Length: 269
Image 1 (tube, rainbow, N blue to C red):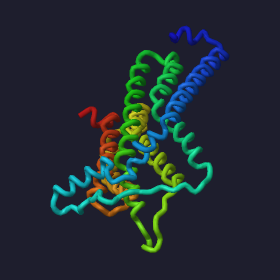
Image 2 (cartoon, rainbow, N blue to C red):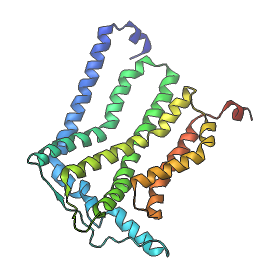
Image 3 (cartoon, helix red, strand yellow):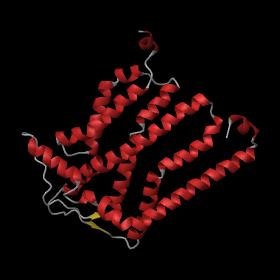
């Protein structure tokens, strides 16, 4: 739809277009959710519950690295296993449904963004479209990178620590399915959003609210804050694990600085 045609559309034409777009989005989400619902038992066993076992890829990687580097605390995968329990009658059924929806939302994200983009695009000029298209593609890629970091790094490290932590040996850990899924979905979704920070910085830079000088001025403060955040996510006290979580967060900070324009003074130089 061209911009000239867009200007000829009435208010109700826009409403119809929006309704059509929302119906398509709803149909896509339902379709993805149905597929995930059908295959959810296999997905649970091989993907969602994989961090509960000692042979998870991150644990084996940590064991290999710490074994090969003298001085590092040795990371062992032997004997680690988390058994989940269900204490609510309908929990397994509702988790089956809600997890199908959340996975559909994550994996249908590019399609949803594409449908919304097709609705918004006619209102933009050609130069605005080019910049926005790149931003949308970059945002989608970074979202999935964040989800991957959450699944392969942040959640397993957090689970490993909390599952083995005991305030007293007289109190065994019995982790409920609801608690596990709440933390699993929350951490992975939050990491997906955190990895959108370079895109947010780029948008703020385009609006003139943010310049590269800001990141240079507050870099030391950011390092301290990110170290604190990494320590909060992985409260193990292990420098190796802390570094593994800190590095992606700091890389996001530097990427955000790269994507904003320099200050006018720096540009003139």
